[in-house]
Length: 521
Image (cartoon, rainbow, N blue to C red):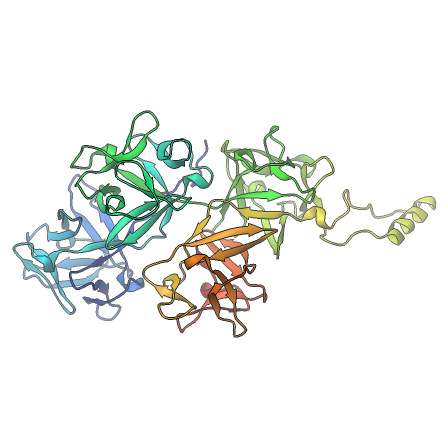
């Protein structure tokens, strides 16, 4: 299967929380560090980098691209542009999963509170212990390092199996839930993985894990000090006997690209079930009707590939086939968002339409400008006079160029904007957009629109003042537009985009695409 950047390991970003529930912060002014912030935002995000050699030393890089350092007197700063000797730390993992950060050259431990941070303690006390809070988007695909297979929900066996060659379909989505400084693994049907391999509906203590990092990989340690690992022929995910993470207990988190199904103007699903031709000719949506969508970071054009690993591509006479093994100009398509419908434009500058036999072809120049009877009559008169004429379109433009697109691998939704995650407001029916913790929302789909449900099964809706509220009794339509890689714009029924306002509230008043109207999902 071609990769071409499809399967990309997520860069592990995280926050570090001290015993006073404050985050380690890298200030922009003076390159100072403190532990004063109560929530995880940009200044509190760190990236772990491994030493290139065989050493177990690591480096901590701030949001400014500078490295955490300590001198022999324990004075801490975050100014170095390149990691040197003083930036080398060792991670000592406590029994509860918290980290102690030990300076490799000076053998002292890093800790403290507020502005009083140092790396001078010869022993580990509670002040030198840090809880890891992942700052990446929590919805991802989980890859077993030892088996090179992906985890997915297996409803028949009521388990998470680790035996998939590719992360395909909604079952491959794993959501990490941060709860009481530990993590739960949540499946697409909203169940939690317990350490005995069973799936349960509540995040009970045996379904909670502490995270450990080894050589840039993740390990999940349960309440008994054992690690999750794939077991048996199908790789059933459960806690094994090991009390130390080896290759069998290590995992990568990979970006979960959107996977979608298309419905043509003939009311049938686009598919490759009958061969290489991309055709709207199926009545059910299964793997052959599912396509993974990647958005090019520069052009914003889309690339679609099938479960066979081949890409859609433009071929002779405007046909669309799933045969390409490399990304090229002919494999990129432009999406026009038209409310409940979309239109696709190929690299030849023409719109893709559904032909009468169901095949897709990029042969239309316009959308919604059908040739009238008078126009055809004029053509016939000109032809009778043997005068040159313009040829009519191969297919009458209009709804033949429109498709319904449905996102299938986000039945549960976590949204993150520039300032933080979307979460229920503590004391009202509004929604916050600047939280370091997140709520999980459920979405349903109907005729090109999505309905979003939150706490207690209540629906999102837009109030008359533009606020997005979360206590609706009846569903309201929202329209998802996948505009950038990993980011979606959401338009309300008022035609406005959902925006993170400066007040920290979610509002439907955005007139155009901007950073504040794009959401990681």
